Amino acid sequence: MSHEEQQQQPCGSPKAWQRFYMGYRERFVDDCCIELANGKVVRLAQAPSANSSKSKKQQQQQLDKNADPALTGCTVWDGAVVLSQYLTAPGSPVLAAAAAAVAAAASAAAAAAAAAAAAGDSACSESGRVPTKQQQQQQQEEIVSLELGAGTGAVSLSLLAAGAVHRAVITDIPDMTAHLQSNVQHNSALFNPARAVVKPLRWGEAADVKGLAPLGPPFQLIVGSDLVYYSYSEATPHSRLLLLALQQLAGPESQIYLALSLHHNPQEVENFLRWAEEVWGFSVQRIQQQIPAEYRVADVLVVRLQLLDAAAAAVAAAQARAGTLVRGY
Image 1 (spheres, helix red, strand yellow):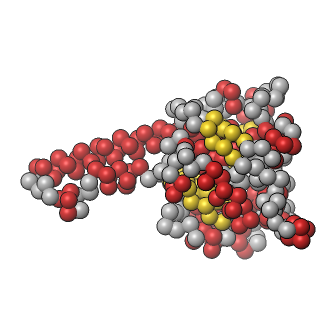
Image 2: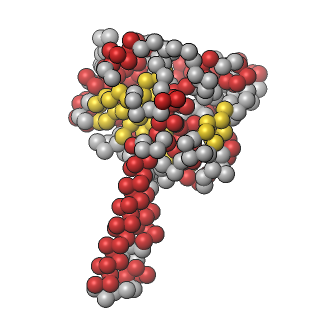
């Protein structure tokens, strides 16, 4: 289906799972439950804002523009549901990569064992000169994902519950980390909670990026949902900061999947993708038919980005830091 055909599709009736059309209690008070294809249910605590547990005096303090997600990040948006279901559905590219990693681990372990036997050195595995099967699997299976602007952590927790990644780095602004950590514990029966690493990450902040080490960058898998909503300006530079963050976190082999809501600001979504492709060196692939039918809706666009021109991205990043990067649309 072409981009033009996607745009011409009518939205039709809202689907029962769509968060956008639900009432206040379902969106900000009750837990949101996402049932995955493997039967596991990810349960996500929600709140009116990240500041709900703070004192009235703290709540009244004016939030900086960069901290705006603290007002909306504690609810599950449609994009998070769509991306969670797409990435964990049977045959998804992420699950396929996880299966390939397991197969590669088994093959490497068998080759190492055969080499040790041929050399008559059965003690090699014990001594560590030839990795054991368990060591080989650990090296091959450790697909590490990073979620940007995670909010409730829905996508990362779904990936862990589905066994699609070995470890998930779940990031958002500092005000959001307590809520994210709470949701990790909320789902500790589904996976080892030690595999969920919650970190503060302000887009474009080099110090925060350094704080992600040694897990990355680069990260094999980068995900994010409902991240583009403000029209771009110097007062609301979120699109630029998101691209700067992607440049800092991705490598040529990184797979980036974003679910972008067309409810908020569809024109800015298009401008963001155009900027990513024309200036920042990313390829952009729109995904539609691969999404499970029940979660295929006209008001959520899923895209796959990949860094094709690291040099162009580095130039754009340098200009962004210097304040000389201009977007004419």
